[in-house]
Length: 273
Ligand code: 13P
Image 1 (cartoon, rainbow, N blue to C red):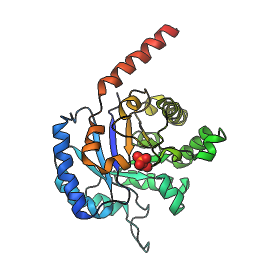
Image 2 (cartoon, helix red, strand yellow):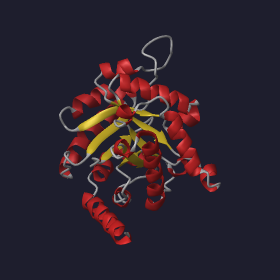
Image 3 (cartoon, rainbow, N blue to C red):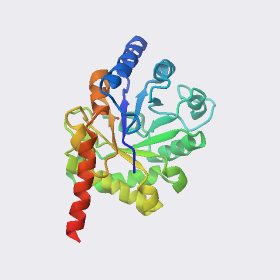
Image 4 (spheres, rainbow, N blue to C red):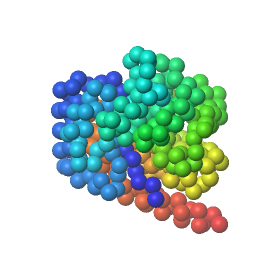
């Protein structure tokens, strides 16, 4: 059974005061929403400069603090970069790798992502690898090939026992920050494809344990129907995670929908046989 994983990605937002105010409010809002942490993993991927302060606020509260990127080298003359050693020294246990904005604005390649995944595992940092097609690929019907290629190139050299601890976020570029969510059917089609590519590479026992998130204009209105899909195990939330009350509502999605849906899926499968 895969435990749902709902994460926020703040991107380049908030001053230190805004971040700490948010942290305190978020703890309170999760309490108000009666979030049961045995049923959902929660993380916030924040700018590096906010990580220490938020780690203190979230201590023993069930909320992980993660980094939005890291370099793959341990140390050296790499001005402006942050190493996996620095992250683990700070007690950071999660990192986003290969977000589409890193790929688009900073030229990050899948080959670099593979090195970063490898470095993350060396330091016991759990990665969330992002993959997703752009609008051109989607309109040309190349979205499955595009995602398959990104996935295989990014997991190059990663072993099955490591891959099991990864999460993959399917984030179609045309749905990021646009208010245009992929339909639950489109998202399920692609998350199922990701699982099948991982199953081809690592076997289905491993692929069945990998958390696959959907990201792209997720909000408190659409989270439940996305989470109802069989291969969607969580969400990577951008814009809507900037508001503590909204994000708490997303974390507190109605998980009975998920269970009912799983039941329906199995009933449908039985009827088919
Ligand atoms: P939005 O939720 O703002 O569309 O961003 C998604 C995203 O890029 C999360 O990593």
